[in-house]
Length: 292
Length: 292
Image 1 (cartoon, rainbow over the protein chains, first blue to last red):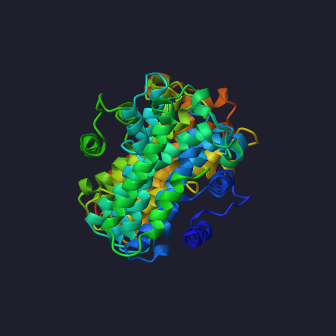
Image 2 (cartoon, chains in turn purple, yellow; image 1 turned 30 degrees about the horizontal axis):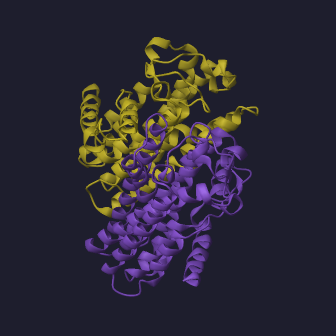
Image 3 (cartoon, rainbow over the protein chains, first blue to last red; image 1 turned 180 degrees about the vertical axis):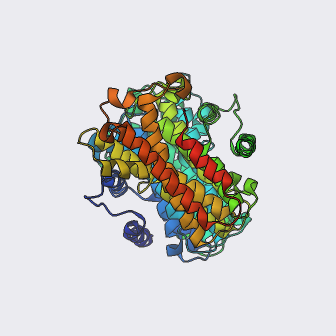
């Protein structure tokens, strides 16, 4: 499993130069490209692109054929982190152990770098070399999952939650948008690259829901129990910002129980697929116990 | 001509509800949708969508078939205005005679509304009902024109120009990105909706260049000579911000001469199309003499 994830990651890291414009110092617009590259190429777990490739392979496709979709989802994820870190949002100084985009390039350039990455995500996804109808369907899923009824909607709930009491229901609606939606896009687009049918798309959505919810719960647990050095960011931030999360609402034990429950849901959803499900099962389980 | 533009605009205004999510007050993410609607539905000249429809018709297509492309380009234009008006960019208070998005919804929500509109633009464009291959080609053009090598790149040049002396060459590179690129997307996507060939796409790009440059020059002239009430925004802003523009670099007479030159270039490019070119000729000429 570690080997397969490493192989996928190697293929993902090898694909960026195909999709990203080169940084030309003589180009007057070169600085925004540099800022885009700074955030995209500074590592990260690449959870979403790995999922896109793994689901493509699980559905019988060549996983590298899903690279345009995989890289596109990671670009959307990266833009959302850049905008989320801005002073008018979370005002974060560090991300993945390095200064956040606006701390390096300034607020306005970071705003543009996010806009540029979101736009490039669609260009990248549309470079998928399979049938145009598959590309259209997959890119539409990306837009739906990333937009106001998906990720942007989750961020809207997050923003408003600062002013009103948080409930578990609202937290779930927020995380369905902020975390599950883009993971859903990754899994679904991977299936679509391989030409999977409706039943498998539904199963991928269930897997994404279980894994995404578990992922977010684990994030909240790490914010309380985690090690700042391993995480590459400060801990206890939700408490400092007076933000409610699963741990503050339910307690750490119940949060851990829910991580297991959602991870099990994800693993169960894999039954809809023939073939070797071990990678995606192990992937869900390793995310549920991750330390960063 | 006035009648045809009015008909196009009526069809554009009638199409929004098909593409925009309804504002549901009980939806916890409803506020970002409200903010998106606020900026998109507050009028404007709809120059870009009118161009998309007119080029579709000029190439022998049903102009209403281009509505998904037309509305998508306007969404990209609107998101760029929302982000441009933010405090970290131009910090504008008024737009089209109304308070800017962040003055109504706050900075963070305006940021999200822009992100939501950019994302919705791609979803909208992908709802084009013609061949998937046409949709893919058109939406890729939109992404290229809107991204770091198009509109976002132009904004990057704009940002950096605050710190260094402006030249006419840099101003042209900036306007090619900020203004021409999206007009190019509109004209090109309109042609693509009708299945036009390469020669016509090239001609549409030339028209877009001429019209876009003339449009920007006229903007600079109006910033000096215009009437704030008619414009719906303050004048003299470039001088207040110590920003160089065509008028400050070349003088108002030379700027006016260039408006005529670029408009003529646009009109000449129409020769590549058979059929009635009067609407697009008159459209370019009326933009060149507009008062708002």
